[in-house]
Image 1 (tube, rainbow, N blue to C red):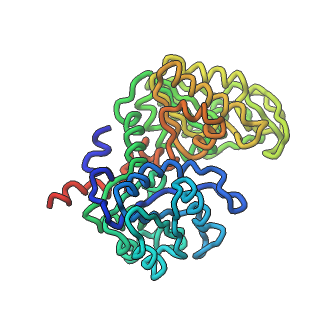
Image 2 (cartoon, rainbow, N blue to C red):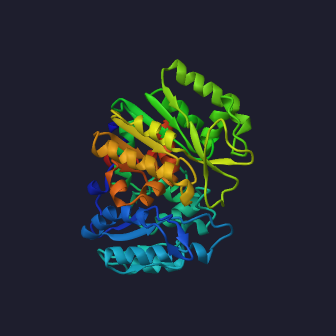
Image 3 (spheres, one colour):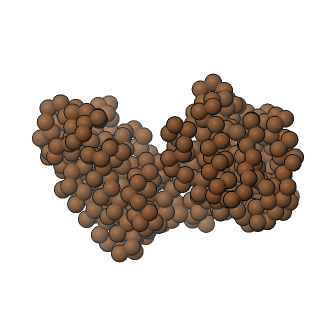
Length: 410
C-alpha cells in the first residue's frame, strides 16, 4: 500500500496559497436530456476543491465528458457540471467557452483567491487523447501548481493527466486519488484472507488479465453476468441465445484449470433469469442446463444468489467488479441488487473490507440506495483504472506524479 503512494505529494503538502492551481477532476457524469442523472463523481471531488478554496488557491478545474467525435459538441458541454458544482459549493463557478485560448486565459487572470472556474470539455480537442506536447504546454500556461484528482482517467496517457503534469515542479494528488490508491492498495498488496472476488459484466476478454492476477491472490472467485455464459458453455451447458464468446471457450477452460490447480474455488450460476430479448418485460427462471430455446440469460437466479452470498461468510476482503445481469431493467436486477445487499451485510456484520470496482458496479450499488452504498468500505470512481491497478499495471497518470519529491529537492 505504501509503495503505491511513495514519492507522490498530496495537495495538503503543496504550496497552493494564492496560486493558480490546475486540478484535473473526473466529471465524466451520465447525462440524460442535458441533465445529470448521477452526480457522485462531482461530489467525490468536493473535498479536494474545498481544501484548495479554503487555502486561498485560484482554482482551475478541468475534465473530459463523453467521447466527442469531431470537435465541440453542445450535448457534451460541461455546463451542467459547472451548474451542479456551483450548487454544491454555494459559490459561482465560471465556465469559459474553451479550455485553451484567450477565453480561459482571461477567466483565469480574473480569478481571485478562493474563486473557481471549470474549463470546457478537454476532449473537444483531439490533442487531449493524443497526449500532444503542444496542447499540454498550452494548458500548463494557465497554472502554477498541478493536482490530479481524476482516478477515472489516470490509466490513460492523455495530455491533461500525463504530458501536462511533467511540466510542473509542484505537482501531486488530490484526496480522491489518494483515497483510491490507498483502498485498492489493500487488495493488491497483501489482502486479509479469506479473499473473495466477484466478477461480472459482459465479456471474458475484458477481464482476462484481472482473472489471471486474482487467481494468485483469492480464495474464491465468483463469476456472474454475461461473462459467466462463456464459462458455462465451456463446461458443456447449452446457453441457447445467451451471449457467449465462442473464441474464448478454450481460454475459459484453461482459467478453470488454473483455478483448480491453485485451489481457488470458482462459483458459477446454477440458475438464471432468462428472456427472448433485452426488452422483455418479464423473465423466466431456468436451470443453466435447461434454458428455453431462443432465450438468453439476463440475470442470475435465486439459487445462484444464495450460493454467491454464502461465499461472503467469513470473508475478510471482498472485491466486486461487474454486475450479475442487466440490472438497469427491473426484471433482471434482483441478482445484482441482492448481491450488493449481501456484500453490504458482509461489511457491517462480518467486518469485511469491501471494494466496488467502479463503472457499472458502482452504478448498481448506488442504485440500491444510500444505505447499501454507504455500507461499502470503498466504491471506486474508475472502472478501467481500478481493473488495471488490480492487474498490476503502472498507471501513467499516477507514475508521472511519483517524481515530484525528487524534483522538489533538486
